Image (cartoon, rainbow, N blue to C red):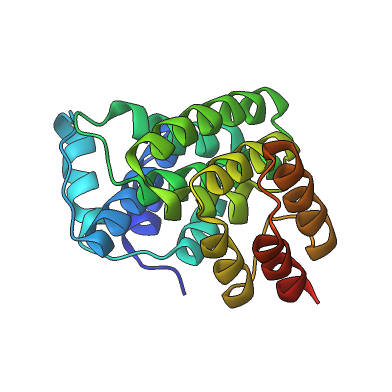
Amino acid sequence: RIPPPPRRYVGCRAYSPALVAQLLARTYLQSLLAGKGAEHQESEEGEEAAVGSAEAETRWEADDILRASDLCSSMFELGSAMMSTILELSDAPPAEVEAELLIMARYFYHRGACMDGQDILREMALGRMDTWAQEGEWRAIVRLVEGLGCWSDIRAAALRHLIAAEQLELLLHRHACSNWEAAPDGRTLRLAILATLQSCRTADRGTLGLVYAHFS
């Protein structure tokens, strides 16, 4: 059962798809930040602020957002709202929060067959990974492999960063412990890792043994 606030507000007022998408995106952001013990600041005025505040009182998981997405008639607006939420913050959210928003945006763009949105999302994700690699945010990069690894360019860039920083084991551990929703299958991931190791010339016996043992 989806939490009540959005359905109550949308049922009482004729909100546009764009506004409904913004409310869901902000609700999800607040829940993610609460889970990380973080806070953020954003510019809100009038009725939107009151609704956004009420929504923040309920903690939402990803599944709650997905179930509530039928409140919005536009998958494009939902995907764009997830991405815009990142850009509109005055303070950058934790990298893992950004990763979750990007993954949710990908889900809605894919569901709505929004190719232009997916292209923009991929460029944004690639740029974010470069920044995260400089900051040592390896868990966020691993999360993108898990959530956006169906795209070969995302997968390749993430693997280059992780292997260069000797963080491949973090990826393998995550792969073993979770159910990847939009990641490559085991064979594809194994071949991608081996190809990246070869291109980076870091395919020592220990690393190769780790990879083969994981996928055996």
